[in-house]
Image (cartoon, rainbow, N blue to C red; front, side, top):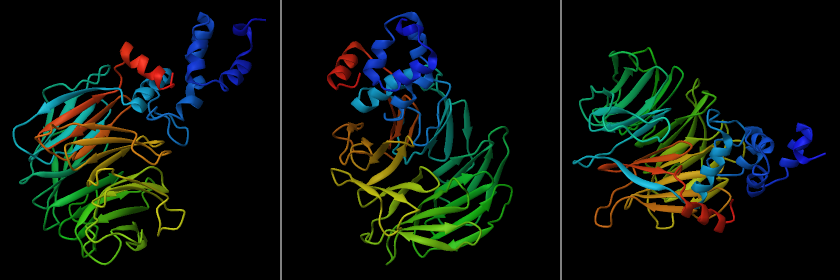
Length: 398
């Protein structure tokens, strides 16, 4: 009996023992094996070990519409830092832009407007003109978040606007007296944080705040747990308590403080939940930290230090092994592998004579988008030339 004539369950056991290079070689044996090796189930064990393959730590496939074999190839580019860098948009004024990515649409805030741009389904190239604009803020948009049916923005005037994504309708939420620095939303729940040292808890269809929490410190970041039963706040750390605190949504009580040895002024600028129990944070103290809420809250599980001692403005994660971070100087963007202690890849997006922080990051399976003060940058990891293949062979990754 020849190899391709073996029962499929036997072939699955054989391919489960093979690495990425061996699977690629096996696919060249014959058409029958090529078709078999192209199945997602064959590549899943390999994919879960790679960066941004679309398979998270629990084994869930985030991008089931893209063949896993193709995503494994792109994942090797992420690991090797092989990408094509382009400036997708430029503008004259220096702003504090914010990004959100929803499928084939990229949302970008510029001054008092939020513009929606289409991404090409195959190339993921940004269309130069927005197909929709959300406006109404009297001041600049400081942050915004997306829901299935609404876009919610916070402005420097202290107001929150709830825009319908299917019509021109919008609703104004008043409650903060200073700029709204951060927002998060899940289902009908909205959490806002402001420079006025308060956290607002709202429901989607209510004009007035459901509850208010006074924190005695400026609120820089908030994140709602995937369970929607709790949320985390990050403050400026100008007082004598931890800038990271976990809150119960219903009781409005502080469940615990995270960390115990923060420097004064080491505010938390971004918080990202990876699971109901794990979250990542970054900020002025130049560290990315991983916290596990099932363990002792006084100490993080792991931490990674920015090598140039720069403030970390934002982070994104593939929900498995990779972290992307944006630094405060020269538009430096870094990729991290959680299984390693040092930075894996680094990209300088702004020129030497123009320094700008990376204010916001978003990523999908093949692209990373970064917003700087006067430009939007795109890193395309899908591109793979012959030189790229040679480099991957040298990395012993293919």
